[in-house]
Picture (cartoon, rainbow, N blue to C red):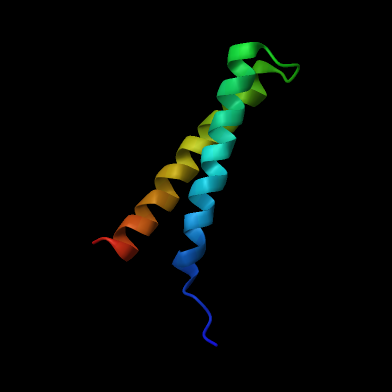
Length: 63
């Protein structure tokens, strides 16, 4: 049994960062009890992580 390359796990990172973005947008839109700055922070982290993991997956598997 071979161990997958580390880039394989970035696919799961894309899903997690997508979930973080959805969670932040949902909280911002419906005024959930978290402070707005924390929701903006989650949104920024989600976008940055999505770009980084997306770039790694794209260059590994499609380029």
